[in-house]
Length: 107
Image (cartoon, rainbow, N blue to C red; front, side, top):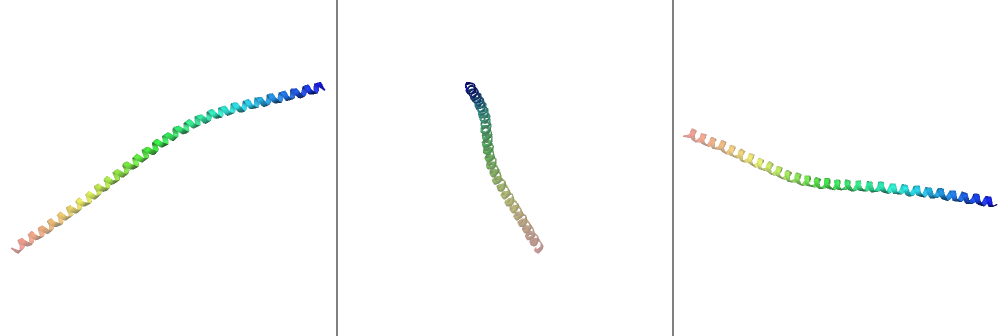
């Protein structure tokens, strides 16, 4: 009977030892997981900062593009008006030539 109790106590002791080992392994795994999570968090923060920088740069580029588009439209508008004025001057010169020719032919 004492032998049976001794074996039962030894078995319980071995079971507790194994459970303690498993708990230590779990704690070790959790610590490693925590370290990996910290590294991942740092990398995510870095990427977040990079994304923020890229977004800011993108907004600056869009603003600059709108400004250049406005300038381009102004240049196109000026070019149109200059051509219009040149064509009007050409038509007026042509009309003046016809009038001068008519005057010369009638005299």
